[in-house]
Image 1 (cartoon, one colour):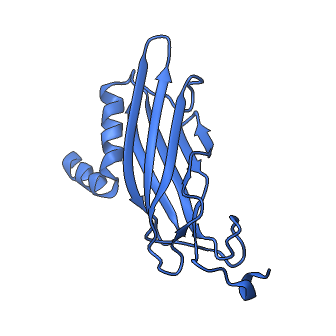
Image 2 (cartoon, rainbow, N blue to C red; image 1 turned 135 degrees about the vertical axis):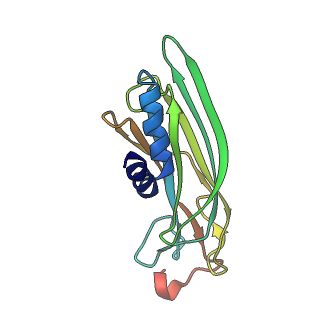
Length: 171
């Protein structure tokens, strides 16, 4: 009966969560954090570097994410650095999830130093393909100490049309 229950649970729960539960039980003294880096890309239809009523989110845009996380505590000095490409979804959102970082308590460590930058790699729209804000490292950080979750929301990136529509956008 236990094997059947385990099989049913395993098919319902994502495998990464099962690995985290297993790791927490096998190493109860370890602390795992969950880090998410995300942002969005839009078409700045009126070429004014703001999201206006004529702007829209761009799907299928290639974005490069470069991050470096460094934790400095009295006992350790650890660093994680990576570069990945992500594609925006239909809402113009790109997202990178880093599920388990052993030994880094991102929500608790006041000495946690992080840096993430997102850069436009290519537009999926032929009508909105001139880069506006090409890269960003500005972020809003949301942290939950209870769950040891950190979300880094990067400032938006945008493309513009090659010509501005003065009738639509005004002078």
